[in-house]
Image (cartoon, rainbow, N blue to C red):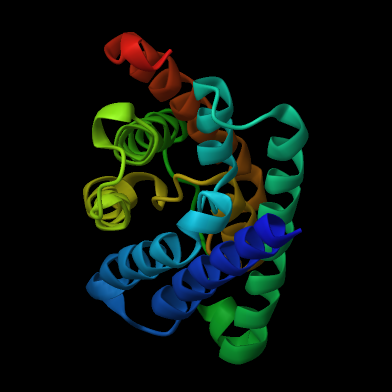
Length: 211
């Protein structure tokens, strides 16, 4: 239960930061706030739950072999629930008028968005697996910074194409908050889970001593 509570807290505050930073007018600094929020939550919860806060991370770590299916499924459920609750809290704090004013109006190019989500999630999961699960980096104290900065970098690099979710729970939340259209959620989900699978298998290939 402590692990699930930690996953809820970390995912909740990540989504809260995304919503409040983007809808609250942080502008070009929003990716910095989001990366910092993820970083501090990873440091806060890493020793308890592993600090996934992302169903794609959980899938990658499952393929990596560092979590069981019996644990991975509740992790993912809690992450989605936390994301939805955080999205509704953001709606309450920001207000309906601002939510509607910032509602996503046009569909992005689906193929480009899918590629962007796959690449961004791949980068994130590949970093997570190498800094937080590899034997060669065991005991390091930079894992949280590396993970948070990866999200910031990918948000700046690819956010203009897809919105930069790189996380199925974020995809759910931004759809609830009208920052993305429900019709587009498929490429967020496929891109994130696809990137996680690719990153996990390439990690195993590049780190045979960890298999």
